[in-house]
Length: 393
Image (cartoon, rainbow, N blue to C red; front, side):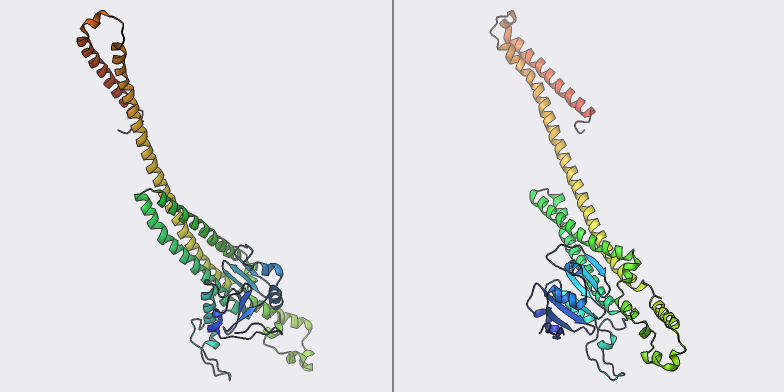
């Protein structure tokens, strides 16, 4: 397994052994159109010189900097920053950062499998060359190289978000059901952590979705992603299938003016623009819908959490009302029974009265009357509270 030679040439390694290389902070893996990969330990200046992009574009892929998810179309490359997927796609090769990361390894394998065109996926002998290899799922796919690479990245990030959402759903729904049956500090803390994780995941999905939506809303930005078309448009004569010797012929050159050549070049450009941006638009729309579906699942999950919180709050309010009712009953009973203190106060005085001579008879009626008054006051307070809706019926 080798890196980049001093002359800038890439030495290809066995694709099956690529992912076993020791991780490096500046490690890259390069794929060509045949799906072969090689490891590169290059700094940003070497990458800038090779791809011919600006430092500000390469800075987007720096894992130490917090840049949002971005898909940028440049003159000769597509700069891709989708969460853990940080790549540079050209019309002929793909540079993927940190290929030994556990989340990036499946993308490396998928690029090896899907980047080769039909001609590289099975034996072709009609042109005097023989390409051998396994059968690929992309047989019959005539999409440009950069679109195949972009599709692998979009499919990977959509699958990643869908898997994280499924895991979150499997953890959240049972926890919420447990919380509704038993309100405890432990269950509340678990729901709080799950809600925080859901909020972070929703924000990440929303950023990627917004980036795709922004691309879909601007045809010029989508046109910038046609790297093969721009490369072919740079040589319009070859795009017409005419060789240079055709125009160098003295007989023909005398008959074709420069205006005619410009006209033919414009015809070539029109031929490249016949399909507009329909192909990339359909590609982006497909994965935009997947992200939208994932976002809808997260929204549904948030609504379920909010509904559970409302239900918990209703339960807590009900318990609070029950405590208020109990406090009202106790206060009413205390107020009613406090009338019995009148008996103690009256009969506890050491002042001589004439009715004290027959105190047994008098004490009995005082107790009866005071008890009747206390019970009556208690019942009146309860009836009044129910009429005002202070307690349940």
